[in-house]
Amino acid sequence: MLLDAVRADERLADWLKGLEESESTRERASGGARGGSLSGFPGAEARLPDVPVVPDGDELLDALVDLAVPFEDINDLIALRRTLAADEGATWLLGRCADGLVRDMGRIGKGLRLLPLPLESGPLGRYFHVYAFVAALPYVRAHHRERGIPDDISRRTLADLGRGLVLHRRAYGVGGLMAPTWFSLHFHGELFQLGRLQYQRSRVGGREGVALAAAGLPLRPGDLCLDLHIPDYAGPLTPAACDRSLAAAHDFFARHYPQERYTAGCCHSWLLDPQLKRYLPADANIVRFQERFRTTCGTGEPEDHLPIRFVFGDPDLPVETLPRRTRLERAVADHLRAGGHWYSGHGWFAW
Image (cartoon, rainbow, N blue to C red):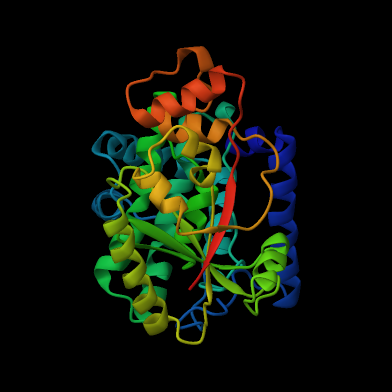
């Protein structure tokens, strides 16, 4: 059963223990009652059931289509819904995951981060988190409505889930969801897609805080900032597309989160590795994107798997097999074949 595979994984066993302890703490605080009020959620008098409502039949189909789940995954997800319902341990885990997503909805850093389940958990494990996100869907939509967020922005933000299924099949050749931890942000009201870029309501880290203060910005670790992300399958990263996205973001956060004052935009990505300038021309979109930022901290440890994953689709591809069809593919592959490494760059600009 699913829980057996989770408990057999040391890292997931610790995560599972934390879920169990959190549930026990809430039960004691509520005098033994199950569920609990959803602090920070509009209509907080509502209670989350022990088993969150994962729709079935046509309702499940509608939710999956709304979330841009690829058609080739939909039949599997509908069929596995019965497998999920028959697995008591998986149903319990789903309830805890959905509870963690919707509790303290919209509060920065308070949502549960869902971890990938082991390959040994089979198709249900690969798709499991999709059901948790579907269960959380009514709550995050309600949060968006509470904030006056337009339906088209809400829809495009949450439809990023479909991209995660595409990336999983591209990397592994089978259905499943890539990086469920990442999508936990979308379904907790912390991240939004605005044009070409995505924006995460976040807080300044320790090294960032030092660099930002040195540059004259009155920001310290823990203060608010916006983290920028560059989604795949979203077209060229042109300066014009980025300008439009940034203009939309300025208006969006001032309008829908007026109590949060943002003075810095930050980005942590291999696309900010300055070594890319050795291989790409000055007018390349990536180089132009880098020029928007000031570097804030050192390079840290090599992270070669990141460009291999995002450029070629599979982080485990051997370096000697990497294709060289595009300028970026040649840059990544040639640098690695020459014995070099790629690093995550860290940058910021005044918001």
